[in-house]
Length: 214
Ligand SMILES: [Zn+2]
Image (cartoon, rainbow, N blue to C red):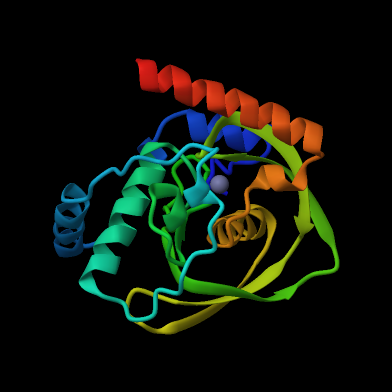
């Protein structure tokens, strides 16, 4: 979830507490320099706020991994860490393609694990369900419980063009499902009762009007 997809109060507190624990750490000097250089040329991109028709559109497959896609993925990671959030999907920055980034490592001092998923697909979902309090970078400061499969297996292509498969659990499982929903034009509030969804949508519309005036 992008989201500040953050989930759960504890996660939310962590995500809002600042970013130092999210700065990537590399062991040898050369990769550190290389990584720092790559990091430095990243750009923070504006995140679309709901309601926006671009957040309700089914995104197109990425297909070939070009240099533009790699740059976009780097920018998305930077934008996600800066927000801060634990996941971000390309439609949230106005690109209707099936690309998402996430990093659900949140323990103090833990090594970050930035993941870039190109054309991800859920190939298996557990019968067991889990409920997290979700949020979304496109729906600032609004949180609600959402129940989803507790575990999912996801296949995707990495930035080297290699196929990857992983079974996600816990917060990672919730996050990857929330992000893949974005690729299908679906938001976490779509799981809520209509009245609650409409209330949040009205608040967001008001927020956008206020920001436009500012
Ligand atoms: Zn989201």
